[in-house]
Length: 96
Figure (cartoon, rainbow, N blue to C red):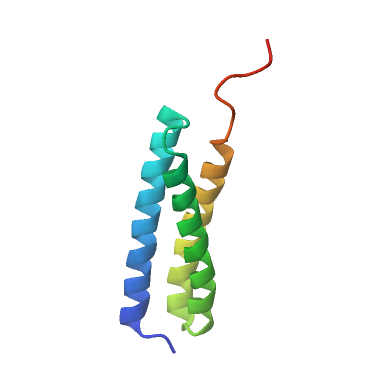
């Protein structure tokens, strides 16, 4: 069984990753292509957190799984938002 302390520490790491990704999303929506690397790194960090969430859930009790599930939903919602931002669109359209 996963300890409460390890779950709390992990959730804090997830929250930090979420805050970083939200900052990158805001910057990406304002500045478009100026921070492509940081934006991609934030998305990758969210992916890693989701993978680790699955592993943590396997050894968690029911209450811990519920906490992890809520964090996973927050992460996935942010991932979807970041994908839909279409951050990789070209600066200049060839359509006239």
